[in-house]
Image (cartoon, rainbow, N blue to C red; front, side, top):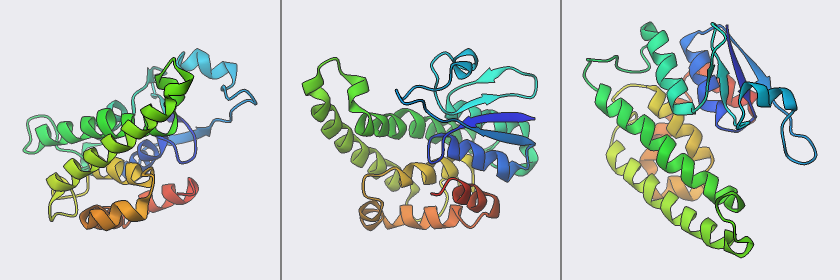
Length: 206
């Protein structure tokens, strides 16, 4: 069994949705923060950086980094078809966009909503936030341009689309994002047609 340490509406959502869609045997441990914002001490023993998501594999080993988790899960459940396997057509683009979403958009989102984490100057947080918003808009535009007139980046529902759909919910103004990029709205709606994804979205109150 997989154990996913999670927070509702956080980066664990896409991983949880993929586990559910693949039919994996898993459980979710929803973490609560202490009054000072930190997690319970036991979680530090699992992940010293205390980051969500954290995934404990069936063999007891620990994975961090959501994109890596999703690539790994796809490889463990090839029959589910949520990623091209190594050597198959589309594999390079799958890896490209999965990592792009994590390294670019996810990173910009963190700087947008937690700017104080990215500067030692208390007066510099607003600048970090403003630049993050600018970069996020550009990064969504790049992704939307690549998506073009397709509903799914690889032509069929994949882990990339699930991850992208989660990130769309983190946009400062989701309605404005979809008005600017209608194809992202089309992709988002198509992802939510998957029943397993729907249930995870509902559990996370997305």
